[in-house]
Length: 148
Figure 1 (cartoon, helix red, strand yellow):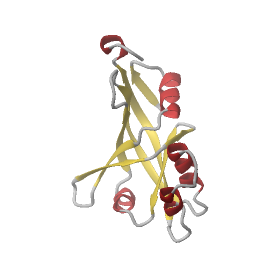
Figure 2 (cartoon, helix red, strand yellow):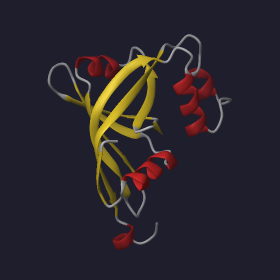
Figure 3 (tube, rainbow, N blue to C red):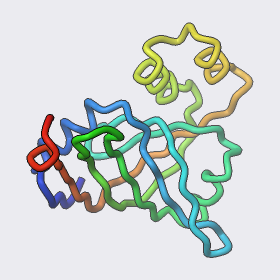
């Protein structure tokens, strides 16, 4: 994470990203010049957001065409707080489903559910999306909304 502005310093922003299990909202460009947004599970590691998705997902082809992204990870309940920013995405195979397995455990708690088994199926080809965060803006409305 190169530049962090807003209510939190870099350390607090990283703590928030590490603690939250709110999906990242990821925005990208389509080949036709439009915009595309989707939500993905993520983990924060070493200044990057890491996600996993099916190798044939539309977002994969969009990111290969144009790797510039915007993102937001924010709470859905009062007091609102979060991190939004922009960066560059890199796509790589997740052949052993290492990233996906970590995300399944992070968001579902284990790999035993029907959904987890389906996602981790050997028949699925997965990729890792790593977002190198160029800039981030943080906000925390706890003081004016109470809580937190």
